[in-house]
Image 1 (cartoon, one colour):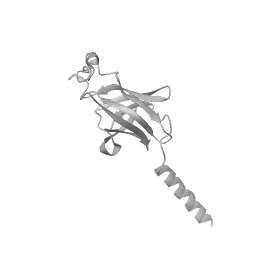
Image 2: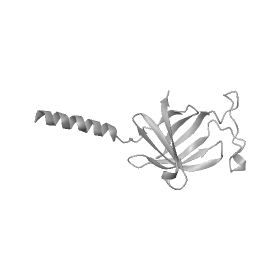
Image 3: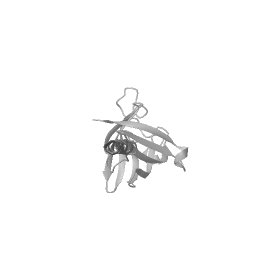
Length: 145
């Protein structure tokens, strides 16, 4: 009987870790894509979550430092702004399991997509999509200091 209890506790621990859900606020902070091609910081404002570009290989000039301008933005008035520092991730809401109903602005193309975000085993996953989530693409990120 003692062996069964130990086995049950062990299995419960494994299942809990495997299916552990993101908890609210775990996405706050600075993140870098696993491809190391973009960095951004996620912050909370009111009851929603936002992210701003810190750096990206497609949003800086060839010197790797100087910000490119937002030349592909559909809003002509915004085309002269620097890309570094703009809020590109907007309106994410915590639904109890993941962050949903957000928008992600892809500055290099000027396109905006729906998105959702979740964290699993210390990695953050951002899925951008048009229409149905199944038709999207997921990028993975790791935390940076």
